[in-house]
Image (cartoon, rainbow, N blue to C red; front, side):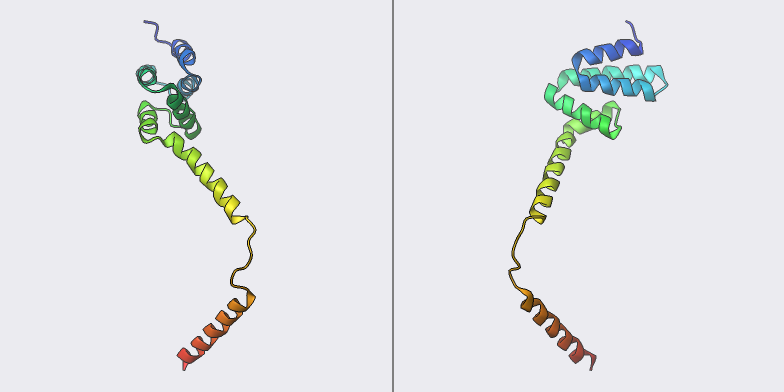
Length: 128
């Protein structure tokens, strides 16, 4: 069995673009070959067991977050963390759209002026 960085990177890139990037980053960041080879075997196995679309999204998320290990990728897939980021972005976009939507002042200026006057009277009565 040819256990070299080139072998694993080539094999990963044939299976998935995201997996190729993930394994390449592992080899760039880790210096212990046996640890890397075992990690790569695990990542390749996980890729075979996972829906390709889900796996690609999870790999993309893992690379963005710098989570390069088998365990991290497995948790991202199990917890659907790759989807949470997209949902959060959608929620933020919708919230900003709602906040900036034009609306009229329902209570009007006089309401707030009267509230301030009531508060001043209440404060004065409590000070005595």
